[in-house]
Every structure is written in structure tokens, then in C-alpha cells.
Length: 248
Image (cartoon, rainbow, N blue to C red; front, side, top):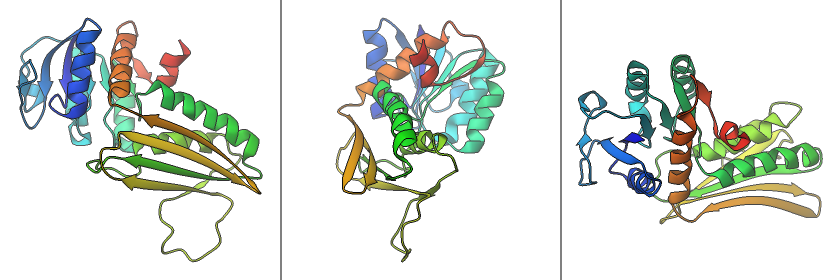
């Protein structure tokens, strides 16, 4: 495949380019606000790209999402959206666009994280009646959004296994009251060069069970994104997720 890499000069964009080459594909052009020498042309705006490409992989910024999706629709090109901080409205925009082009979207491109989400559903169904559920996520000090998209993915997976919708609580310092049974606490830690760590805590009477995923490098996300691009190559229009790919 010839691939357009959005966010090409960032850490994730560079990781994607390296994995593309490792898998026998070619990053032919990139999009980034700050250009750097990455071995292929980099443009400040997607409308300026002159090269032909078979797929888009996006690790840029939510503000660029509409232009990326519009380009994918115009050129009938599959798109893998792996940017964090995407809003519900933007997800609906992708859903509408996926009627005419294949789009792959996940809050986290790691296979391990998505298996963790599956395990969390099973544990929640078995334990929710007698256990409180808390979620802690940790990332590097340059990450802009909190909680992370992965934390939201995991919290939503947990919520799907509950008989009633839970209440997500992101801050307790102003709340002087007993924890409500319907609460799921979500805590964010930012520091150093932590790539990403997510822990789900099931706290019961005199016992505790934890499920945790630790990313040791950005390559796990890059590999997932490239495999998602390969997955889309044989797909009709539609909005696909990591669970679709794992299922196959």
C-alpha cells in the first residue's frame, strides 16, 4: 500500500512510518503542522498533497478530523483514525461518512488493550454486585487529553456489562460523601515518558482483583494501525473497530 500519514512528524507518525516499511508498505506523504525530514514529503494541509495514496492513517489532532474524513470520502480512500480526544459528534461524523468509504476507528490500536476490554466485560458481569469498580490510567507528561480515550473505551466496556448505566466520576476532592454504588471512578496520572498504562480495580470485601495493560513502546499502537489499514483494504464501506478485526 501507499499510505498518507497524518501527524507524520510526531512520535506516533514516525513509528507508523517505520512499521509500514517493515511490513512492505510505503509512506508516500505526510500531514503535519511542523515539517521535518521523515523521508517523504510533508504538507501543512491535506488539500496540498500531490501524491497518490491507497489509505490514510491518522495520528494527528482532532481538529484535523473533518478535513481527513472529507478527503477520504472525496478520493474513495479507506481511513484509519487513531487520534485521541475524538468527541461524540466527531464519531457521528465518521459514522455518516462511512456510508461511502471504509473507516476504522478505535480509541486504542493495541490488541492487548482490546482483549483487556473483553476481560473487563466478563469480570464486571461476574463481580459488579459485590465489588466497586475503579479505573486508573497513566501517560506521559505531554499528553493533552484526560481521561485517555482508552480509559473511556474501557469504562464503556464495563458500562455495557452493568444492568443500569453507571456514573463516571473524574474528581472526588470536592465531594464529601460516601461513594455511591453506581459510581465508576476514573483517575488520570501524567508524568515522565510513560507510554500508557491502564488498570481496572475491582474492590470487594476483603479482596481485590485487578486487570492491567502496560504499553512498553509506541510500536504496539503503530502495528495495530498498520494491520487496521491492511484489514480495510478488503472491506466495503462501513465503520469498523478493533473488535471487528480481532473477530476475523
